[in-house]
Length: 194
Image (cartoon, rainbow, N blue to C red; front, side, top):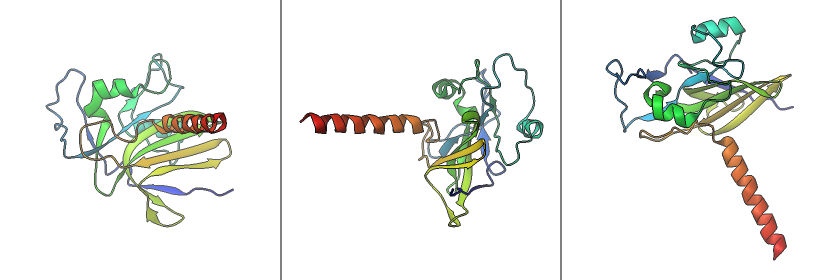
């Protein structure tokens, strides 16, 4: 089995977070600039956390408690009402400034998904540098998966352009896959029908 080796360099220590409180007071944070490049930056703790969960700790606390060695966690922490993945449209419409990081020219947007027993355990979105340990080169796009027993890690990377719009590291991989599958089915039906 070929093991994918991807290394996230300076994933959390060099990222800049911009946010605002939900009361609309953004005086503590800079305004979003349309000339900057942005990525989503937050961590969804996964299906084990929901509206009943009381969690007032930080990412460092979470990583210590779960003994999640090498798994990134980027604030803010997002916990959904029913433990399902967060509604990206809702987060964008209501908390845009607090879930973005400014991507520097040598960084990419990353969606880091950690699975246990084929179920999503947690997801972290962030600005980071990604290096392929196989070729020792910087990576700028694609999805890569590594398995180790019941644990799987998937890293999807992309580069968002300048502007204040939904960054490229949102959850679109399955939509693209289904679109491709649908296109193939339509092509197959069309080819065999005529």
